[in-house]
Image (cartoon, rainbow, N blue to C red; front, side):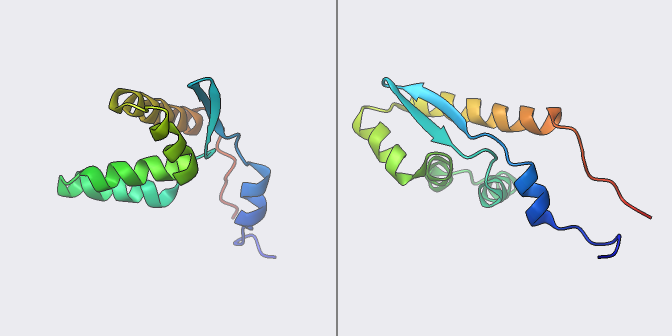
Length: 109
């Protein structure tokens, strides 16, 4: 392998994060260790076009919680305020993790 090659499968496997967890309604729920790229791109597109609508909110909830967990929360009385708080918390966690993790990538000459 040349110095201009990087196996990102190995890199990301070695740097896998820990899933986010939170407790609500006396149950622990799980979110991905990092924000899905598709979700971030949809949010950025919506902000650029000034079209953050309900569809994006649904996509955010599905991407972060998964359909099964989201349905369970809704059945238990999940409120808009709870949803907003959890999404804001998760977003802050994703941002904090990115800022505090050391950059392990260097360009080799």
